[in-house]
Structure formats: structure tokens, C-alpha cells
Image (tube, rainbow, N blue to C red; front, side, top):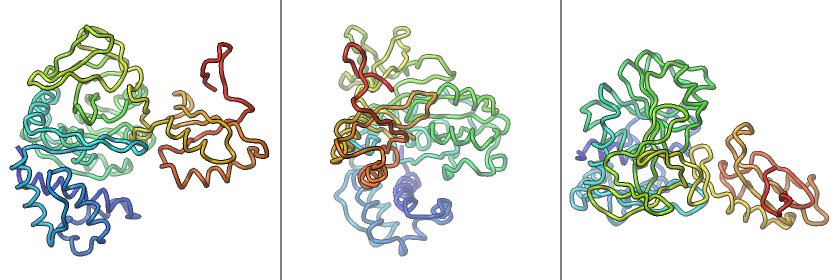
Length: 377
């Protein structure tokens, strides 16, 4: 299933992710192999990436004297354990480990492969250490017997020179939004894949206008992997055949046909038929912001902890407003909108970029309807 080169890529992606956070030039981490950079990688970055590799492959964390030795140890651990541990996305709640056995990963890759017959090459813009990146840019190439090329997720590249007919370009909704802003065009015969967060219908339509030969969106989560798929804006997601679905309860349940427990879907859904649905809202009350799961209630708690704030509500913007959070704030006596700068400074030290509200509204009381129900603003 995995070979040594796969392990090299997995570990390299861990290090590139850590390095890219400090690199002013994102392309720099793709210019050299991690083995060439090994002696120059700062110790704190080496430690952070090594800890994540230990979790991923299932061994006790340690620092290795060489990149090759780390790869050999990780590969031996996988051959012994026959599983990998990914993490749920999100920056507000503690990411949860999600163990995927080798059998589950193989089943998933085979179960999705029928969507990509005829693909000649996979071009990955996502890390292989995420369940989505692993399945579609590491396992799927083995099933389809096609090569995979890794590129940085920078929309402004020479795509006409990088892409060719028969390519499957794998990325996330945030990238596709920026792709459209850059007025890119797809070369003939390029297929597009998206996942990790909902892709807006206007984005899907825009990608097809830009020349995408086919669009595919995958619905899934860290604990489950790929669950369902769709190819057009406005259509429901169809559940992959390797899942059983139980509709006898109020909340649909899914279970792999190969065995395992019954699981709830990540979202509340509206069933179109026995095996197709429309997602409505997250079960865990999180919302995707720029490809990251964010929890508005936790952002509310952080804003409300400032002495200037009497009460607060945080919610996702409406589609016409944008794809970020917005906040409604009631100030304590003695504070006004003039103190927003102080509040922003306070929040900048406690919230990620995805968690920081893009818009702030102020009032003497929280917005509620005539029946005292929470109300949008």
C-alpha cells in the first residue's frame, strides 16, 4: 500500500507545513528536498514536525540524526501498526486524532476511483498528511496507476505551463476562490477536485466557465474520510457505495460495509433520496472559514471576556456579505465604538485570522425577534 517514497512525501509535507509558517517566500520550501535542508532546519521546527510524524505513524516521539533514519523508522512503524492517525481540522477546538487502518484507506481509495477513470496525472495542492490529501493524492495515484506532482497552493502561477490534458488538480474551496479572482483559465481537459469545506455554487459554476473539464466535490470529515460526492452546483451529494446508510432514525447514520460502528454525518442534512442528501448545518456547530473549521460560540466567549464587552453574538456572514465571521457587540457603560481598536488588539492575541470577525456591529442590546429568538443582523 505505502512504499518508502510515500513515507518520504508524508514526512516532507509535515516539515514543509512547519517551515512555510516562517518562510516569507512560500515557494522556497519546494525548491529543495527536506533531506537537503535537514541540517539547517531550526530545532523547534524539527521538534514540532517530528512530534506530528510520531502521531501519524504511531511511534514514540523522538529526534533523529538524519532524515533517512526518520523515514526508515516511520516506514517500519507503519508496516508494524498498519494504520495512520490524522487529525480533525479547526483552530478553536482541540484537533481530535482520527485513526484510519490500512484496510480503510485502501477501501476508500478504491471506492472513489470510479469518479476519476481516464485521469493521466494528479497535481496536488494539498498536504498528504490530511485525510483528504492522503486519499486523493497518495492512495488514488496507486489505484489509478498514475503519477502525482506536488505544487504550492499559489493561484498566481503559470498554470498553462504546469497543467496538461488529463490532469486532476486537487485543492480546497479557498484556493478555488482565489483562482477565480486571478482570472485563470484551465488548459483543455483538466479536471478539478475540491473538499474540506463547502464549495459555493457560484464557485463551481465559475470553475466550469474557466474551462474545467469536470468538477468533483467530496463530502467527508477527519473521522470518516470520504462519504459522498457531487459534480454540479445545486445537486445533492451521493453517498459512496462502500457506505451503508440507515434512515430509520431522525438523524441518518452511516457505516462502512466492511464493518465498524454506525456514525452520524458531520452535518444536519436533508435527504433527497435513500442515498443522496443536501447538507444544511454542522452538527458540531462549527463553520468553515477559509478552509478551517471555526466555532462561533467559542469566539463569542473570547470577545465577551474583554472588560469593555457586556454581551456578544458571533455568526457567519450571509453569502452576499462574504465568507467570514461577523460580531454584534453590546458595550459596558463607559465604553463606545471608539474602543474597537483596543478590542481588536486584545483579540489579535487570542484569535486566529480565520476566527477574527471581519465585521463588527454595535447596539444597546443583542438583536432578537419579537418572540425573543436570536436574530440575524
